[in-house]
Image (cartoon, rainbow, N blue to C red; front, side, top):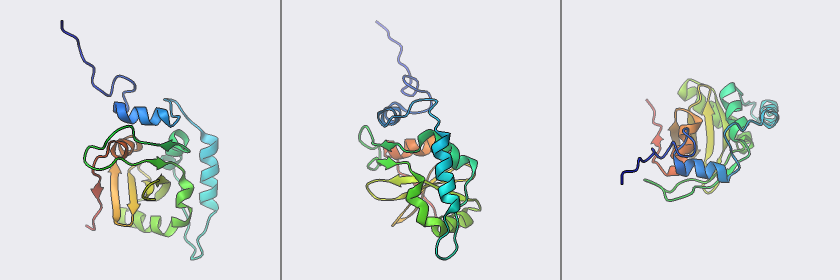
Length: 169
């Protein structure tokens, strides 16, 4: 008897591999989730904060969109990692409230604006997005490129795929 198998990303949601989709749904995400009111509260909080040295956050559509769809979620991986341990995360941009200078420095290095989106809960690595939607992780060991957009970054983190380290030049 011949049975046709579906590609693993098409069973539940074509945007994400099955384990990533499962982790997102377990955290309370569903396709179409959009909490723009909370995203605007976070945007206002970040815009109004100035560090003691005068550093400020920039807020742009890619950040607001990530917050509206995934903000507030506590996401736990649903299986082992491919290359490294998968990362649990809490997507709340206020983890980066006091990191305006660090994010500004990264933005200058990337020639883009950068805004916080949350943190990896076990390592406290800061998760950030740039103005074109690329996602990064900043931790004690360096800065890491997680993906060209939030979906790819979530898949990288939740599947335990080794991210690419950012280097000068």
